[in-house]
Image (cartoon, rainbow, N blue to C red):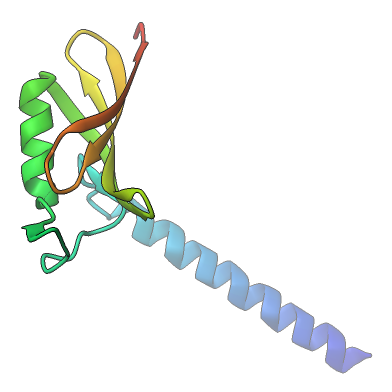
Length: 116
């Protein structure tokens, strides 16, 4: 019984130390302005076209919507590959866009007003 208590005490102590180290590490991390959830491989092709690089998609839509992309993900489905973007414009709207990964065409567009 004493061996079990000692093992549990050591385990709890180690978990506490790990949590303290993790908490200290989190404070020192510089977080990016844009979160890239999934990176697109450059060689992916469809009908002879390459996937448009994420950096180009971000730049294009930040300019087009006069805002900031805060999230982007490349989804691959049977209907085709597309980017999901979350963007905030300078007028206080949040946009959720599905963008064809090969052409850059907007497939779906949703807008929601935020008053901050």
